[in-house]
Amino acid sequence: MSHVVTVGELLDGQSVLDIECPDRIYLSGFVNSLQTPGGVIYFLHNHRGFPVASPAVFGQIGDQFRRAVGSYAEANHIPVVKLKAADRNADVMRPYLDRAAASGRSQVAAVGVAQEPQIVWTSRQRDTDPGKPPQFSFTKENRRVTAYYFYLWDEDFGSAFIKICAYFPYPVKVWVNGHEWAKRQALKAGIASTELSNGFASASDPDGLQLICDRLQPGTIGVFFARWMARLPVPLTAADQDAGFWWELAMRQVEISRTIVFAAPRHTRAFFEALVADNWTSAGPSAPRSSSSARPGAPRPGGYSRPPSTGMPPPSR
Image (cartoon, rainbow, N blue to C red; front, side, top):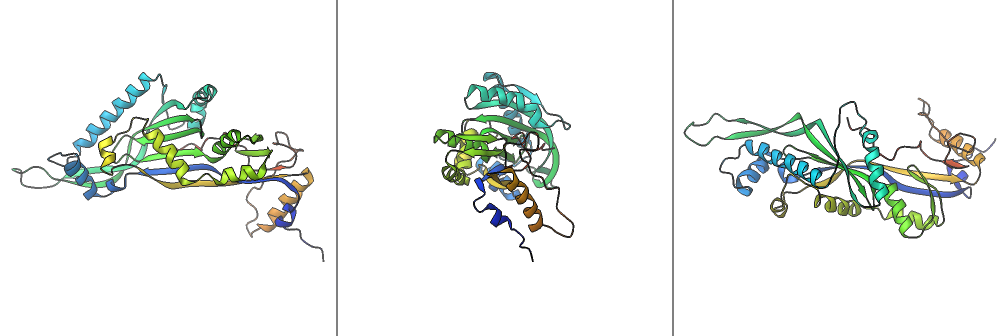
């Protein structure tokens, strides 16, 4: 009976590069103390000092934030781009990001303005004594509101964005690319490499490159986030932050990519067949693909990776 070659056996001694690295990372940011009605009332009445915890304050803070974004963009000569529902944001913003990357300096490449559904606080006035101050109850609803996309070019992470909703409680989204971070750290460490769109085709020090990829931790992204939130216009103030009203990040979508480069194209085909055999189900494989020197546009002979991408996330709407 013939022996069925496994993926592990194929990798043994046949690959010249095997790198695993976080790829696209999409995070959500929330002000935890503003996620309950009691937290909203405490923020408005006890912290901000308004005699009545009124939803009118939401509009005041939001209007001030919008003005701050406009003034920031004008003062720093940052393009403001209106994003439509049919747009693919990555394609719209690519020219601005390329221009920022060419400068080699961390900066806001452009500000995108969109109308998007967000979970925000709404309110209704309670039936109380007309002779007393009004009282409001607060509930969360899905409403279409303004969101600002700050598209960034960062010296450590390359292309990234931070999205801030302009309405209370100001949810945030953050997108970065782990491979782009690793490429820049490898360059600083003197490790020569051949880049794929989202990965590596070769490296002068594969073990050193893997150690760099392993260094990308939540704290790394936390420093990135804190640095930019201190630089961008935001709806909350330094006094709010000192009182504990600030954003915390949580995972929304994290991709881990493994790129394997084989010594010869025939090993790529054998790996592909073994991978399908190892993962075959009753429904069949889900559109598997490989790339080798026989295919136009392949990254290099013997390369195996996921299909190339633009390095930017899929459209958010």
